[in-house]
Length: 321
Ligand SMILES: Nc1nc2c(ncn2[C@@H]2O[C@H](COP(=O)(O)OP(=O)(O)O)[C@@H](O)[C@H]2O)c(=O)[nH]1
Ligand SMILES: [Mg+2]
Image (tube, rainbow, N blue to C red; front, top):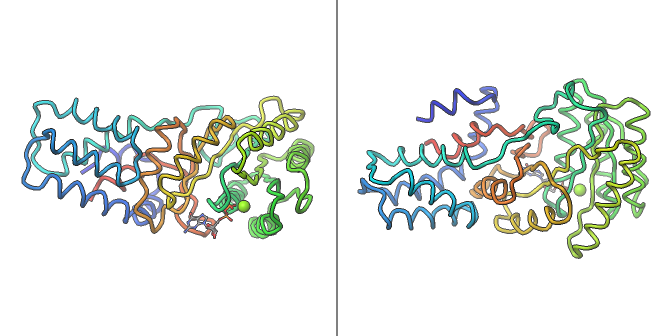
């Protein structure tokens, strides 16, 4: 089952099994729904399609993506019988594989930055509590382990705890930080972080933000200002605008993605807290609906629990029993 995905996957056997383990609730919930629908059936008829549609929607795949999947399945299943439920899982896996966008250059798809323009600047956005600071800490750790010089920018100046929390990760990862404390101007922090990155020949600068959504215009202006000031040092910065969403919030993640993609040019996605939730379908839906390639999965609270997204590993973890 899904041997094709195993061949395509670049994930190490350890990462594959960690991904599979973290996604077990999503997998068992989705596969048991599909299994029940297909029990005693041998053809994909209108009833089966309706029930599959409901199963995908209740698995947080999102309405637009579910419709795209059901249309593709209808097309594929026309006049074709199936022998067992796992045939349908395999079809679903192939359909999902095609509808999720891939990262394309110049955005880096690994922690190896040898092929990109330095410093590689990453602006991290998303609402409070989704896991931005934790994700940045894990990224810093893994970038540093890959031999990169890392500078963090503490531009979430709204809460004192955010600055302290980033400082703890900085110590753990052995990287540098630019911080002006609480209530400082976020754009000034971002400016100094990128300036330091350029002057000290850093490989990567990662900027944390507050991402308050209470006011869309305010958010848009703040992110635009950060962009404007850092472009004084690097024309095309930020290279990456990473949107972080929390899988456990289900449909809210779609609302957040809508607001942030309207406010700024998001070009990568991190989906956190995939461990211990059955809502892993969020990752498929948000990525497809807003056309944002997934770069990271958060599978826990340790530095090593941030995995570079490997589509075949993810898909086979969800669709194969
Ligand atoms: N289980 C789990 N917890 C996570 C993950 N990522 C972040 N968290 C937790 O989520 C909470 C909020 O994270 P934080 O980084 O402060 O969110 P921020 O407000 O967006 O910066 C913290 O308790 C983190 O430890 C993850 O992938 N898995
Ligand atoms: Mg934070």
